Image (cartoon, rainbow, N blue to C red):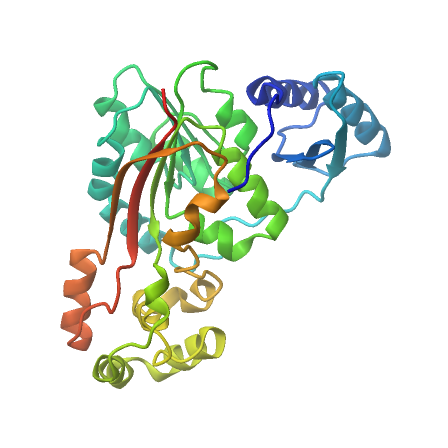
Length: 338
């Protein structure tokens, strides 16, 4: 398990200071700030929303260092103002319909252990936050999503709930010293699929800022790497679109090779119109067995269910005549001890 060595600076204050520095410099939105603790100090990887001049970089780097304790070594890295969101979704209305179809289940998971303030990480069009608002009156709610298209949709549909393309701005809506919850619904597998190891490490540092972590995502355990039932795999191959199957197997290997691969294809085949883009996401990248290694503890498990979703299993039986070969969906609530 990765451990952050105390003492550490007040991350909320650091992020707020960084955002203030960027506003003062006239940068219209700090697109991202990743904080990584190293044995020698602190590494800040900054992604601005526009290109910076050398003067901007020098001034901002100095101001960020000034926001940290004097005895802490700070290394600042400025990246290019480029980041990928959801603009490659071919059927965006259909994608959002699917997201809203899972809202009852997301809402159920988020109300199992009520919190006082929530950040929806990957909030899409804000529908989950709008659902949570009446269930948690008085709670601070905010959303974060990389996609400007999604954030604009959230602001238009649910103007009462703040949403941002910048993690620092979303995080700033949460009150320091009050228990903070992060909702990770279908987020972790995307991070593991699309990010570099350094970006993944930064993601887990962000998650570790929260007292309660609510996870609802696709995941498997180690036994999913065993071979599937041969008859089940043949039933899927017989019905599947051969072009989709060939494209999948070229990327992830034969569906006869493991229960993970067979289940993965069955999940992806539900999106034929957006299949090429979906190939980039490894839906089953997350291993339940290794999840604790990513988090800076201590966290305690308050709730855990790992299963094949009933409606997906029924759908698969209608289409292929067989159900899912392994559990594919995890709901997990982790909490820091009071």
